Image 1 (cartoon, one colour):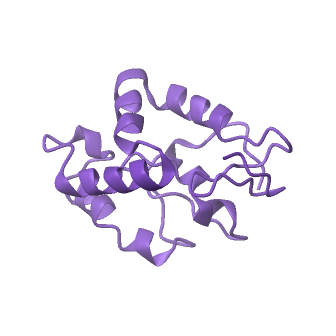
Image 2: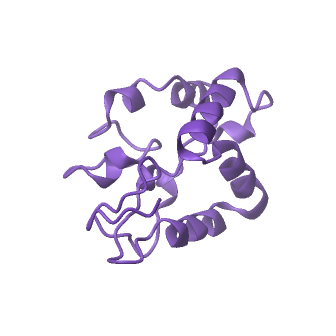
Length: 136
């Protein structure tokens, strides 16, 4: 899958994840449309996501809009992403909150576009969805 010219805002999940760079999105023939859209094509753990459900129950689009942010669930996910992928979903959310979603997604597009072929580099394994070039 090639990196699109513009990342759709619906690809920014309530937790701070850019769904476009998720390996489940990058490598599937029928990729999901992101956490803010329907459950069609989503892996089970995304369909049953407690964080997404919590935001929806509170009529919030993003977790950082909550007065309890960052909650225990976000902190646990943050720890996992810090340890496993050297990424911070809390920092992603802070950038969106301070600078806006468009600026964040533009920077993500630069960061996760394969320099070899223009494919999408997965945050989870550092591999391009098109040419399998390993970035890290």
